[in-house]
Length: 239
Image 1: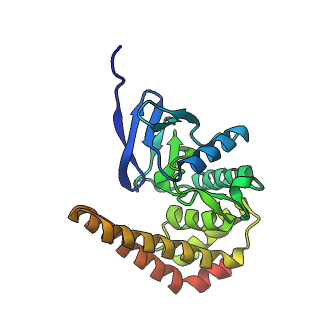
Image 2 (image 1 turned 180 degrees about the horizontal axis):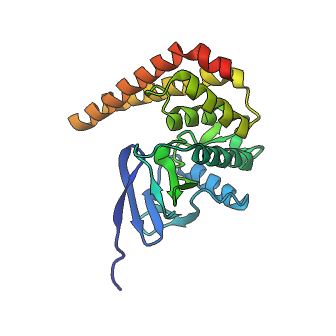
């Protein structure tokens, strides 16, 4: 019997030990894998069709997930209103599938904690699924929504604050059920948390190239935080 062909995949913004074999994805298990697998099983039970399925563990001790055909954006897509609405609808459905479940603990839902273009699969330019649930954990709806708005709208780029504010307001209406008065503070909280993580990773990186990449990402996040703080009143007024 011939050995199955493994092709390496890139995850998110960093290269990870992820390979594709046929219609499956294999990934090393870690301390968080048990929670992740339970979450994916729950999503399957709830008929949430926008996530990979957990199929078990292979002979090398790696998790087996279904491979979702499509493409993932790494900065080359200018997201349309229809695409953004589809993503926020998927996010709401994901949260609703986890609300009240024991995996959410005492929080409102299970949060993905990295809802971003690099973790969203598109088919024929239509968003169809989220991937990379490695950081999923109990949380509040507003946390994921804030992260989504930050990463998909690229808050801090060259788009004027009043234009971004209108987009944020419309997307919040689609999602619903969120205290919009706390949203900008939630965005800043997600940015600060991600910045701290990037700084720690840069400090602990083993090679110069990784340190420089992570440090450059930290610099960009600092500028994005500065932009949100400078335009906080404009954004809050629209919400």
